[in-house]
Amino acid sequence: GRPSVVLDAHGKRRILPRQLEDEAASSQFVCPICKFVVINAVITSCSHSFCDHCFRQWVGQQVTHVKKGDAPVQLIPCPQPRCQAKLRKKDICAQSDAPKSGAAGLLTRLRNNLTVRCVHHSEHFKHEFGKDAERVAKEAGITCAWVGDLVAYEEHVRKSCFVENHIAGNGAAAAGLAAPPKTETAPLVAAAKPTSGPADVSGAAEDRTSVRVAKYDFLPTGTDRVQLALKADDLVKVIEVTESGWAAGVRLSKETGEEVGEPGWFPVGYVSEPEAMK
Image 1 (cartoon, helix red, strand yellow):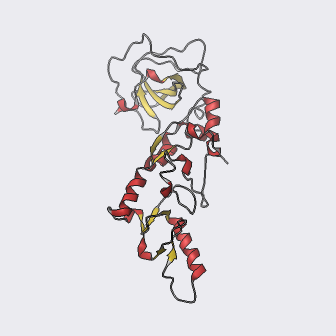
Image 2 (cartoon, one colour):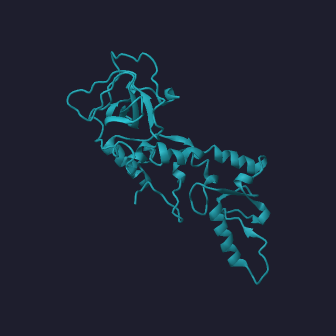
Image 3 (cartoon, rainbow, N blue to C red):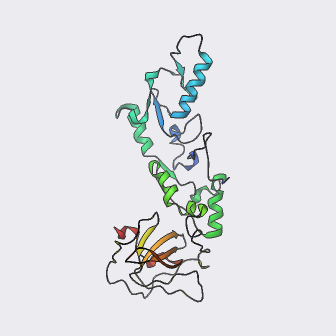
């Protein structure tokens, strides 16, 4: 399988501790049972966090180990290493049900503010799970520098990560495009004619990619057929953007929002930012 697809024992894709921006300071949010960043967290009265499924399995194992006859098991040890606490049922609660104040509330706020790097971030090339991203960077010049909140991570990988889309065949590769033009960086805008005003994009279909407006004319150089010619005010669906400044995309009809012509590469500086499309 792909090195970047790190699965737990139940086949769920997980976040590794090395993806945390401040791994040392965030160790309390790594489940000591599965060794991944905690999901569906439960919090104990001794201020430790565990994945709900991991904790339930731990409880089952402890009950099986200490149960004698029909007597209920009143106490189980906390699974956090070196913690001496003995826990009752009332000492454990789901993070979503934890009090807003006190230690449990503080843990919840800290976890929600965790900062994590994309699994494909260039910082991870040195790790085994970063080998997919390293290969894509070398072959296609596409990298990811996303760092964000833990709660936004899954949506980023699923919808927005150019590297993940490239590997999964959702980006320029899926559109049949070769690698970007073989220049170090895309040309800068020079002596270009700006648009006369904002274009009407009401007919454009919603997409996980961004729809933008061409601000300037762009004429491909030489006979490079992988480049896409643009005219000011053209409507463009952007599929990928590389660190070298090239974007892959296809023109859209302003009337219907349908794709017009073949996709190609163009300098991203020649089109508007996604925010301009609101």
